[in-house]
Every structure is written in structure tokens, then in C-alpha cells.
Image 1: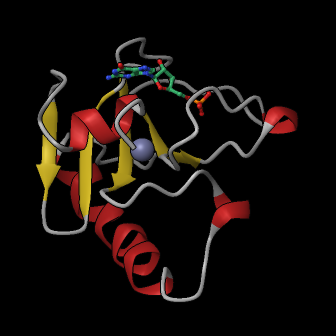
Image 2: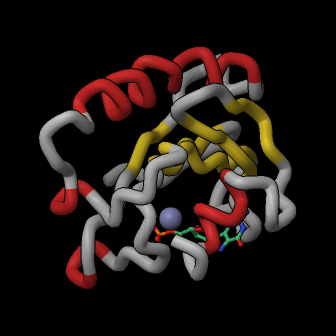
Image 3: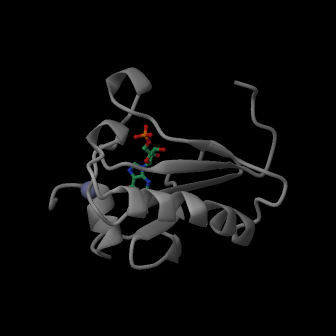
Length: 111
Ligand code: 5GP
Ligand code: ZN
């Protein structure tokens, strides 16, 4: 998806502070952090959100979720973290390329 900013980041065509990448996923710092540490983890595949998942995406999504503890640990989230994915207008999703926010490194409000 040429016009998708997260596809551009994954392809290396738009700058971002990348903290982890492999064949399936990329993790980078959010440009407007909402916590002391705020990372975004995305699949390289353009998937709009949870509602857009298709058969076969299990492998990518499972890989992404299973890498989160390592990405968190390597980026100083040693005391735990919050993982959020916003879906659609009702979830206040801004960027329509599925992403998981990792937030922590300080006091987070309870939800
Ligand atoms: P959403 O509301 O879609 O769950 O969150 C999108 C997130 O992406 C926001 O936290 C926003 O700050 C972040 N973001 C949007 N555009 C860019 C960008 O070009 N680079 C980076 N690093 N983060 C972005
Ligand atoms: Zn995309």
C-alpha cells in the first residue's frame, strides 16, 4: 500500500526509530509518545485492523504477539507494560495498518 505510512516505514522509505525488525514484523518508536516508552509493533503485511484479518494471518499475528515480551524487555520495559490495538472509528484508530502499542516506563492510568 504505497500511501500507507506504516508500510512506508516497514519498507525503509519513511524514517522512524526502528528498535526491532525481522521477516514478518517491525517495531519502532511512536512519534508522539503517550508514555515514557511508547513503541508500535506492526506486521510488514498491510492489514487494516483486527476486523481485516484473513485466514493465514494467524502465523504473522502469533509471531508478532510472541515477540512483544522480547521487544519490551530490550527497550527497558522491565516492570511490565500496556499493549493496545485500536480498531476502527469506535476505537479511535488513526492509522489503518494494524499496530500494537507498547506503553510503559512510568505510571499509567488504570483502565
Ligand atoms: P492509533 O490511534 O491508530 O492506534 O495510533 C497511531 C499511532 O501512530 C499514534 O500514536 C501516532 O502518534 C503514531 N504515528 C502516526 N504517524 C506516525 C509516523 O509517521 N511515525 C511514527 N513513528 N509514529 C506515527
Ligand atoms: Zn500499510
